[in-house]
Length: 132
Image (cartoon, rainbow, N blue to C red; front, top):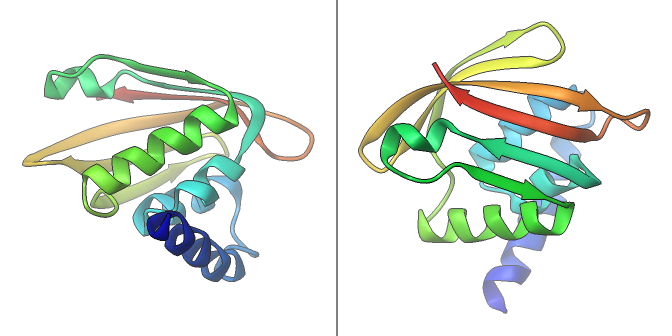
């Protein structure tokens, strides 16, 4: 339970910093901070996260539906990784695409994140992540 309390505390601290950021910038910020709650809050309650970039490191494609599933996956990933994944070389392309490099273990992977759909409240309805 201590890890969950620490995560909630970090999220409260992070909320103050993201007020002037757009949705894509918030996504990268929360990824770099390892804030699973902040990431999940970017998604619509029935939002979808599809990540096929994991195929490049020998893992199965990840397909999650629902804000709770997304929050739990990031919670698990950040704890298993002992913190956030290292992200660098971030390039924003328009209002719906981000290119960046992410480090999984010893592997540096270049990915494209496509924010396919957002709703009227600027929540992510679908995010697709593909390797380059």
